[in-house]
Length: 388
Image (tube, rainbow, N blue to C red; front, side):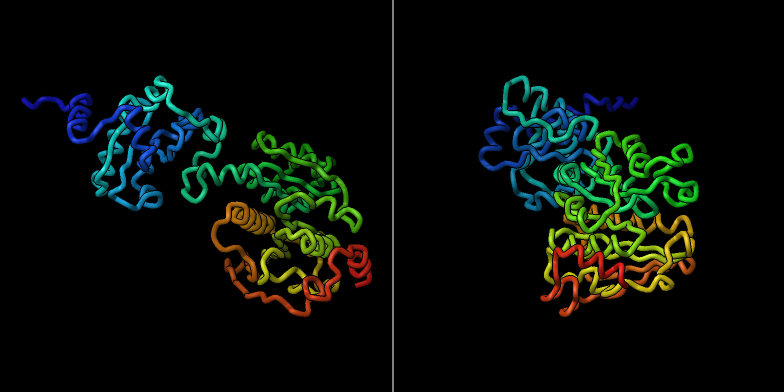
């Protein structure tokens, strides 16, 4: 008759193969250069962790360890809640070829009971649970989530593009979102402006959007600017933000924002839709190689060449796609990930279901960013747009 392989038997066998050290000895080894890894889940570490410990959840240890420590001969200490998961984690690292592995006996509970140094968790329990899937991305993690929580994004327009962008920025945990729009919700908006609802027809779009965003994520601060962006207000409305998402439905506002971001050295995430097609780009005046909006559109097109949605119509899902692309670019800029759409214009055709990319070069004679540009002369921009 075969003897059942009980959990205690299994753990006992692991202890014969894996070194266990006391929390005090772990602290001493850490001082001598050992890497201490806390393999508890994000929500467990949110209440605190051993000072200097690196947090990698047990389920992701094998996937992430080489990114943090490729040296298989470095001394590595593993700690969990009670000292059991750390044994399993140690066995996994041994199988991967790590040679100097030890588990902290008694885990964080004993570490804390012995009065050893503890750092407060950077995330509270709500944050750890709310952003759990995002936190598991090595490129985001706790540090990236903290960046998102400190970010301030201005959204020009709470309509077709601003609606999906705002929803996903709020869901991602962007700390402060400023909505700039003086319009009210109309029933004709609802097929594409998904942040609003039928019961809020007639309400200011900024207030309607705030209700939806706070219902989705009450941790996000939503600032309302229920006024029209004009020459005498553009810099005041944008100043203090990390970037602006352009969801404007008129060229004067867009040209004013383009002028302001040049002076404020603030990235502008451009988006536009018409009928079945849309386009997205990023203009970042912090980069010497970045074109600006007026490198792409030196002058406003004639009204008949660029009708707005109320005149030309638009497929309802299209602003959602373009707005999500803008939100994606915003998150990339905040987190410093990937390659933003600087110097590139991404166009999308819904009917062909096709994306196309065109290179944009900085125009040395550009009236917006060239050497003769009148940066900050917003009244001149407003008059010029009105006359065009």
